[in-house]
Image 1 (cartoon, helix red, strand yellow):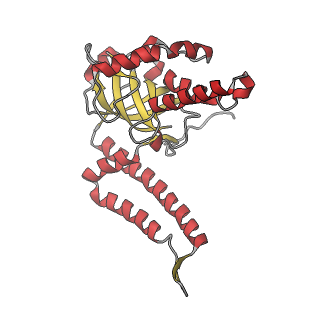
Image 2 (cartoon, rainbow, N blue to C red):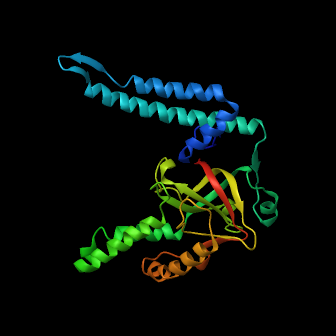
Image 3 (cartoon, rainbow, N blue to C red):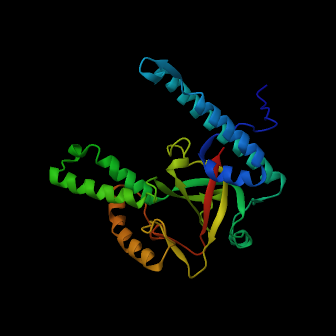
Length: 284
């Protein structure tokens, strides 16, 4: 009595992030036929969502059936994305194409290479800047409670819009910097930028322990760094950007204290020995 029987396999996956575009692109390189089948199912669902009815004034679309078809189409898209992940993940595992580590330290960091795809378990922590911006936005939801004057609210809203730009990519999606900490170890730091486009279930439960699949984008050398905030959205990082943003962000540290957000100098930019990765999937 009371003895726990562990499952033989963990088949269920709970995703919080899934870059399905990267997965489909990668899968098409070695499973083109399967990708075609996935896309065909989605296309069939799209075509089945429209009901053409002939009336006195020409073709009309059945509204209820169209809405039902749209829901069905979205369900098929969702199913096929997860199906594509399983095929892709299985193939990488079978081919030994995943870099795996149990411990995380400088020795392991120096063994990995740019372009390798890693699979590891880590605690996810959102960067303080994102917490600061969202806290500031929440603060503005009820400015009267804090006795703010109308002109003060106007100025703070202007600042809020500017801050939103700091955490947005070139396509208007939020770009959330997160720290990935294997075995709860924060050093050397592994940094990823999550696009809101690929978030499956929001950020409410993101700061937990997950399995991570990511491709190594950069292993920073002693003379290299990258700004936390990318002002040049569609261009490589340049030293002036790092200097400009770092100086600007220092003024935000005082505000972070008032909002009870820990915002240290290390959070202003990414430097050696940080490892920057392109996140593909985050799940349990």
